[in-house]
Amino acid sequence: MHFQWYPGHMTKAKRAMQEDIKLIDVVIELVDARIPRSSKNPDIDELAKQKARVLLLNKSDMADAAVQGEWIRYYEQAGYLVLAVNAKKKNELKQINALIQEACKEKIERDRKRGILNRPVRAMIVGIPNVGKSTFINSFAGRACAKTGNKPGVTKGKQWIRLNKQVELLDTPGILWPKFEDQQVGQHLAFIGSIKDELIQSVDLALDLIEFLTKTYEGILNGHYNVQENLDSVDILRQLAINRGCIQKGNEPNYEKAAYLLLDDFRNAKLGRITIERPNER
Image (cartoon, rainbow, N blue to C red; front, side, top):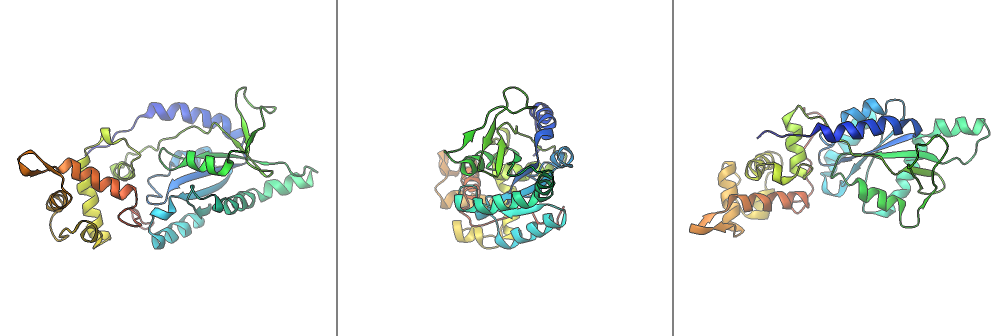
């Protein structure tokens, strides 16, 4: 299966980010904790190379906790301040705020020496589609957030949202797609639903997911669907279809319906906490 992407989306967002990044103290990047490499846009590293960086592994409650720890260490060694989060939980926001202050401590100290006290840190939140960026912004900002309006040097129309006394967020971060010449990146994005299902072959994708799960998370498919995992992927999907009543005319298995069932169960963590990628794999 060949995965496509649309560079037209990226050109406009990239141009906007190049302009907006000049106004920013810290870039907060969200990635999906289940695919921390494939859901991370390498272009952001170039655009934000002169800025403080915070990396949030979102949807951490869906990811394998042990592998997640490996990813945190991996990205910390690469120079990021890293935190595993669930954007839906507001009680985690204090940790995030502390991380932002840590990332910007040199800037805050420079301001202090110049006699500038209590100036809020300016942040931009970036991330590819479906990593939970909107949910994070809504949780972090809350309903009580106030728009502080245009500021000097800010292009007309841009708005800053005061998240709290310490942080302001530029509310037009734009959406960036990753370039993926590596088809495995496209496959992993399709697994979590970042590529629309209408654009992919669901049965082929489900077969790929079955192959991964039987190798890496032995017993999960058997425990959830009562299938024999020592069969090939097609036979496993056939068993899954029969066991879950995915039957079409002629009493034949409906492979497409079974494929969507499996993909939905994975995406909603009904199969348990699963991470597709490991730091030591390419």
